Amino acid sequence: MIMAPRDTAAIARDLVLVVAIVLVLGAHPGAAQLLRDDHYDATCPDVHRIVRRVLKRAHRDDARIYASLTRLHFHDCFVQGCDASILLDNSSSVVSEKFATPNNNSARGYEVVDAAKAALEVACPGVVSCADILAIAARVSVQLSGGPRWRVQLGRRDGATANINAANNLPSPFDNLTTLQQKFAAVGLGDTDLVALSGAHTFGRVQCQFVTNRLYNFSATNRPDPTLDRGYRAFLVQRCPAGGDGTALNDLDPTSPDGFDNNYYASIQKRRGFLQSDQELLSAPGAPTAPIVASFASSQKVFFRSFARSMINMGNIQPLTGTQGEIRKDCRKVNNGS
Image 1 (cartoon, one colour):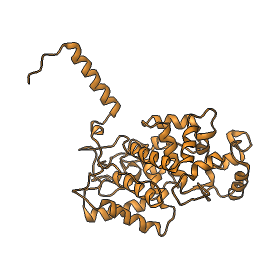
Image 2 (cartoon, rainbow, N blue to C red):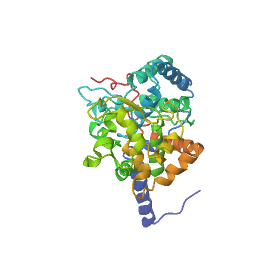
Image 3 (cartoon, rainbow, N blue to C red):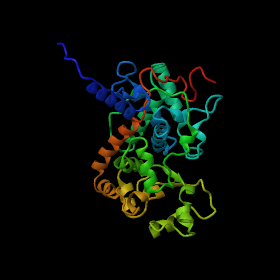
């Protein structure tokens, strides 16, 4: 069929549209290529089973590992996209994100990722990216803890750079709601994603240093955070005394610390959110996130559905695909690098 000639104005409008689409999709043209849940069906069909086996073995000795691996995926995706940059060690060409303030002596699970990568290199060498291992590990971790299932999207490739400056600006436990919203919006995530992904705090442990300001000197007032339940504060003072060990661990969710459920939101409603960033979702004046907290607290099914969707959204932050990046042989260093 022969198309009629188009006028110059129409062509110009289309060019503007194309440029706009490219800008929305990000600087990397490959980001437009869709990730697929069947990406490894032909090249490494046992990828999920292999990662699951490694994680279950690690969990026998470390009850925290599922929460830690989920957090590792989060900290990766929020820094220059889901490219496994958080896994890179220091080298002559890389300043590792592992030593950024939010990660140093806090982010963990690297050895388990190494073990999963080693097992996959035996089964299907050079096929599965470290970025995809993080995504699969997060999904398996949530599922094995009683949380929702979702069809994790795959096909990411690994980056060759790290960004410690961006890692130092990760969403923080000390951030107020406005700052959290801004940081999520910067990577294309909205309020529902913010509240749903914060729900990962329903399992795992956290160090005293991240709550002491709420207990003793909130906002430099020499007083406790007024949004903190008095009974819960008294409990935390026993766990985290002034001048005590800042690395001492506490349950993020005191009701079911190793299970993935919606109790986190019920705790927030009781003003028992451990971190300032947790309680901000409900207690910030005029918080637009408050109705979402209420919805998730009243229905675990609604929370699970939203969490699965938000994990997929997060996993789609600026992925390297196609011929971009590489498939690292060792998750800690770039191929042929020093």
